Image 1: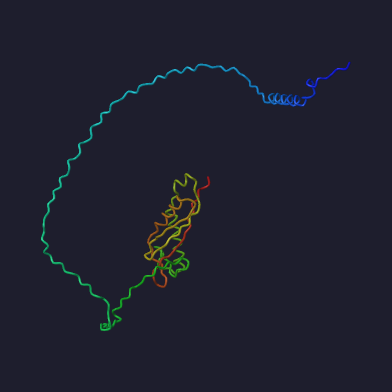
Image 2: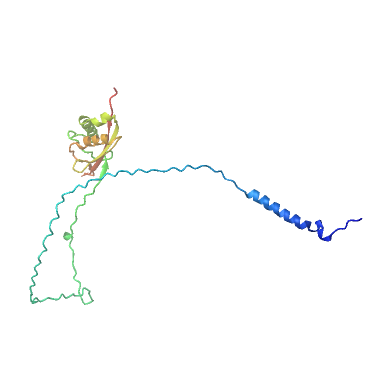
Amino acid sequence: MEAKKNPQLEIGRNSSIYFAIGLNLMLLLSWQALEYRTYEKSETEIDVVQIEAEAEEDIPIVPINTPPPPPPPPPAVVQTNIEIVEDVEDIEETVIESTETNQEDAIVERIVDVSDIHVEDYVEDVQVAFAVIEQVPIFPGCEGLTKPETKACFERKVQEHVIKNFNYPQTALDMGIQGRVSVVFIIDNNGITTNVRSRGPDRILETEAERIIGSLPQMKPGKQRGKPVKVSYAVPIFFKLADI
């Protein structure tokens, strides 16, 4: 006897649909498993913060006896006195004449005589170096000598003056300052020493060197072409500490 199949009970007829449904379910479960996250749960202690109220110190109010301001000054009384003056003064009008000339105006001819011309003497401010001056300045005590002797006497007298008036500044001694100071000065038309300038290692030594040269006596001025002129001269002054 053969078994008969019921066409309504055939199992393999919807197998593709079941496979697709199962596949989707598996994919959904796999995706949920990958997206699943876990967190560490830690116990948190919650304490109560107690804040004590700070005692505020009351600052006493000290009254200050301030004198009241002075009363304002009384308003100034302005007295207005109006005086009516009659206008009786005659005003003269100023007539402005033309200063232009024409051909009818005659020009006054003026003859200038030579005696009417006044020529002022011009004193040329000449400064000549000591080495090229025709007649060197004459130091007191060097009168009546020849030109070379007067020049040598001038240099000797200047050196003697420097040695005689030399004074080492105490500040420079304490600080150990020493060196050479070059002093340049001018003997003017009257034989007076002016425009003293110096250059050295320190301002203390320069001031002392200028003081020494500034105390030179008045001399007879040097002459160039028979006229007194300014003469420039330079002298070195050495400040040296003694070796101990």
